[in-house]
Picture 1 (cartoon, one colour):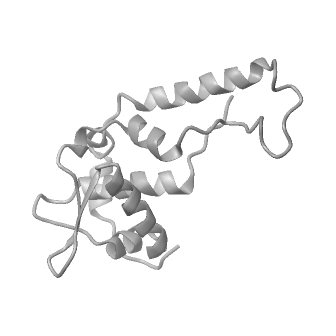
Picture 2 (cartoon, rainbow, N blue to C red; picture 1 turned 120 degrees about the horizontal axis):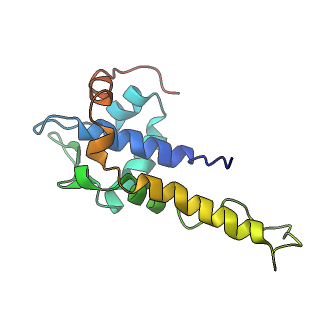
Picture 3 (tube, rainbow, N blue to C red; picture 1 turned 30 degrees about the vertical axis):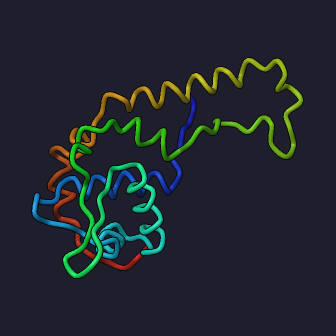
Length: 150
């Protein structure tokens, strides 16, 4: 069995998007409140929010009435798209790294791992943000409270 693990950055990004997805239409969150609710450092949450804004998933507004909200239409964005964009084009194994693998020229394992990685992403493609924030997850997201940063 192939073990695929998301980066902490992508994991947090998905949690932030999910939290924003359940806010009432008139509500907004702050990066600080999200960081507290998700028990992460504010600086880490801020970097993730910036990346989500660049992807067009999160809208930000500065000032006294400012805050964050999920962008219009983002509820229908594919989770697979979000993960692909945030994880980047890297491979499961680094065959060409600092110590290149001597098998890299004709290794069948590398292509099998690349295919497994794509299957992982493809399994997430049909899921939308709305899908992953529906019950039973929705009440849990709504119940998040602030706590110490992790």
